[in-house]
Amino acid sequence: MTTARDLRVVALGDSFVAGVGDPDCRGWFGRLVSAAGRHAIPTTAYNLGVRRDTSRDVLRRWEREVAARRAPGSDERLVVSFGVNDSIVEDGGLRVEPDESVANLARLLHDAGLPTLVVGPPPIADAAVNHRVVELNSRFRDVCAAAGAPFVEVVADLGDDVVWTAEVAAGDGAHPGPAGYDRLAALVLPTWLDWVGA
Image (cartoon, rainbow, N blue to C red; front, side, top):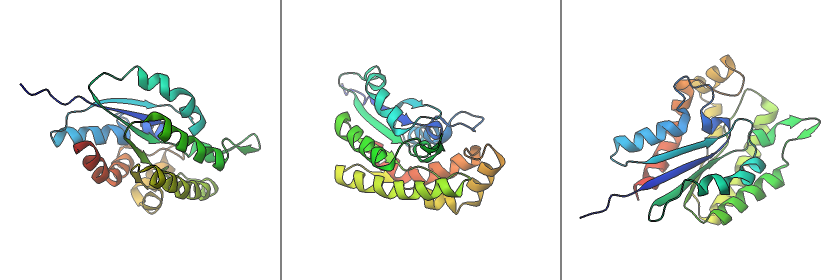
């Protein structure tokens, strides 16, 4: 008798991971899980996106939250995405300085010891924030390359995407609606299917 694969994927991150703005509450991560199912890759998915979370917040909570969702013998993986909240100015300074953001990602990848897919931060309707997000994205890419973790960049493509930008502008200035999440998920999908299909 063949034992079925027990694939468990935990998504850690911010409100974009949580899917804020999507009336179906699926966001991009839920769309990727659905796509895996359509490709006959059954997945137990845990969305641990938290609104306003920075990389520092995720680093503080990830271990206990992931531990509660692990099981012996399962194929356990992480999806991580943060950075926009780090890049926002609040009370006269950045919520998290770039050097710390980069160190937080590097530490998470090292300490988790699990296969991890990192999705870069998306753009919002704020040019100054987006400038910082682009720079942080580049540094995240280098961290992932050094760690051997797949990294999907979305900031440039979504910044040029009329659907994403229109939905963000029509919403709260940060989060898209369902069509925008469709666009983000489509950028991640090829890497995602290759990653979970192994």
